[in-house]
Image (cartoon, rainbow, N blue to C red):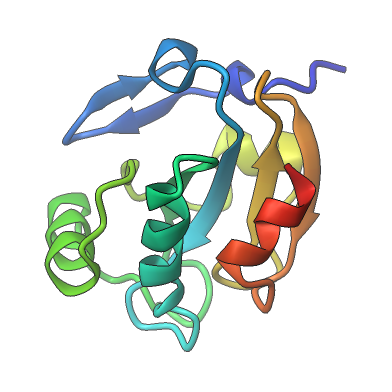
Length: 139
């Protein structure tokens, strides 16, 4: 089985198709985000993690848990950027049928995290309660 993140396409209305060249030799964490979840403050913590330069977060908004991400892709981008000063990639809103979840496992709730090494191979999945900065222990 292919363990690479890049067997899945990620499209960002703001940044186009994301690819390996944009994140060469950097670990990546993909997380399913939601604007109105109890874990939404993690968006700021992911920005702090991003600013370390050690890991690239990628937000994958979904509305599958408690309808906590009701907006459209552009609304979500604007909200994350204005409210949480997000500068890392936010890909287009999707649902649990996205190929990423089919390959790497469905989340149990919002803000589950999938960590990939610097070659972008899957390492492990973390639950919502795991703080973004705690991921540094695993890269």
